[in-house]
Length: 445
Image (cartoon, rainbow, N blue to C red; front, side, top):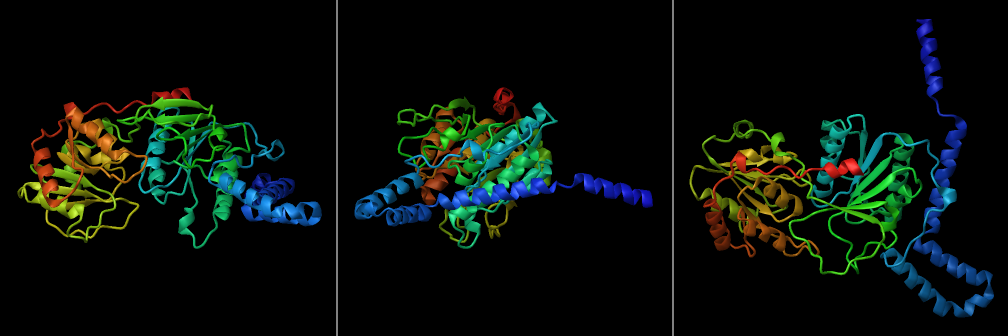
């Protein structure tokens, strides 16, 4: 027993971090905090004033120079001018990189960013099972990557905190990422998001030992709010394709290597449950006509809502029609108390797609391409107020290809007409399911 205790004690001593390393890490953290403070607008404007006090000849010019300084800082904050860069003296000192890939999906209103990187993570593991794949994300659904044994670090989104300044939150992101990078020494970093966080950019600039990739839908349009210096922080920009591409708009010339790839879909057809298995799991009659409805954050308590109008139109077709209503893990539970309506709060719902005959979907990127991959007869409700995301044009591709319909202006009459028209389509059979677009391009990055 004494020998075991001595061995354990020796092991503990051997695993201790040298005091000099702890001091160095703490010192580096303090230096980064000072740099963040010095980079704030308030500090830099204050310094402009104190410089005028220290050098009185500047003072008479303050009525001109101060507004100019404030204006230039404003341009920097909205991305029209480059921000500060990390000097070589402040680079992170790391041992050689390991066979590790760090994935950072941001959180949006849905699962789009996370779903793409989750699909990539699973494919990377199939390519090389020895690769350590780590997630760092503000997404709250941490149990999803844990199911597949992907270690996951989490920092809640800024708006989950009460009155937290953006600079403080970015400091949290920077420190967490640096800790992860020092610990796991990734050879590659992949970010999926529309807008890069400053704390993330500060962290990934501190090392040149890992490849930095930005997975981003769409090109960088001229006049967008993306900081002009953000793109240069990456070594490669990967653009997942869309059913419709707009190439006539001016784009930012950034000089970073670009790679266009097919749309990324998470669930492959051979991973889906067979029809009978999926229906039994969901408690669905084997002889029923089953509709899958996923319309996002609709107001179920409003009898005039699109969800309720859609449910009425489907259920009024007869007792043999059943609805599976998709409920997002990111939203509140829907209060639905109807016969022949089942709730599905799971992820990914694509595992159950062979159980369904028809679908009614919003026009988002993931929803559309999931339906397109399996050619399920789908009625689309595109959101016409999404800015750069032209959902109407995307959904109209389904009409051109002959497997979907679009209801642009939703009323009780147009929804009922759409349900009746899509019901005339031939339900999808397994021999019509298209192969999932390959992720072979991952082997080359």
